[in-house]
Amino acid sequence: MNTTFALRVTAVVPLLLMAGCERSATSETVAESQGNQAAAAAPSADDVQLSILSFDEIQNLIASKRGQVVVMDAWSTACPPCLKDFHNLVELHNEYEQDGLACVSLSFDYEGIGKPQDVHGRVLEFLRSQRAAFDNVMSNEESDVLYRKFKLNAVPAVFVYDRAGTLRERFENEGAYEKVRPLVAELVKESPPTDETSQ
Image 1 (spheres, rainbow, N blue to C red):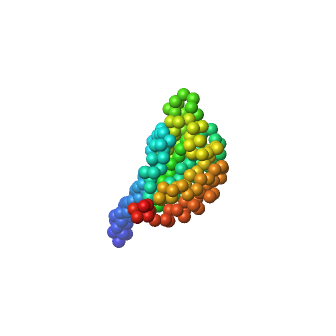
Image 2 (cartoon, rainbow, N blue to C red; image 1 turned 180 degrees about the vertical axis):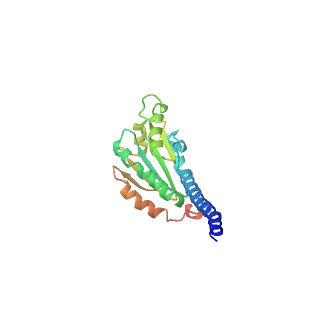
Image 3 (spheres, rainbow, N blue to C red; image 1 turned 90 degrees about the horizontal axis):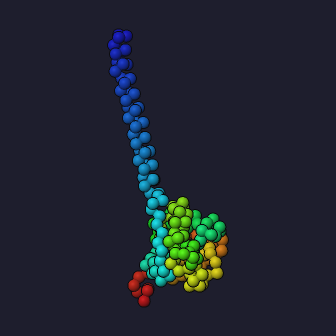
């Protein structure tokens, strides 16, 4: 009797151990899969690009996003408040992209000395550190010209366009995102314009 019981226990214990391993392996596989999905969703530094455009091309880029709400952040790596606030643009992109928000960052780093390509690397390095995986541009025109064309005195400045492509608000100075955030939350709820409403 004792021998039979011992044989049964000996047969059952390995099965229980194997079942435990399978459960553990399954939960590890699920956790690993979820981790891979999260990693795939998060942009890498290589996803961040920076284009050099003319003023007219920047305007065309904004116009091409008609139907979306557009937030354009005008900034420079030489502007500490710009760098401090830049994370807000990335957070808005992550939060509202699925609701039709398009983010654009416009660097004012080129000051007319040398070529725009000379400062391209410095600007791109910062953008990649922020995982700014949206439209990043800098102008091929020097910053003083750009300030005049955008009617700005200085950066930081944040431009918010509605789905019809109309500039709704322009916010200047540090801390602008306290006003930008509620405006974006309101604008993404609006319906995209139809052909009738645009005429």
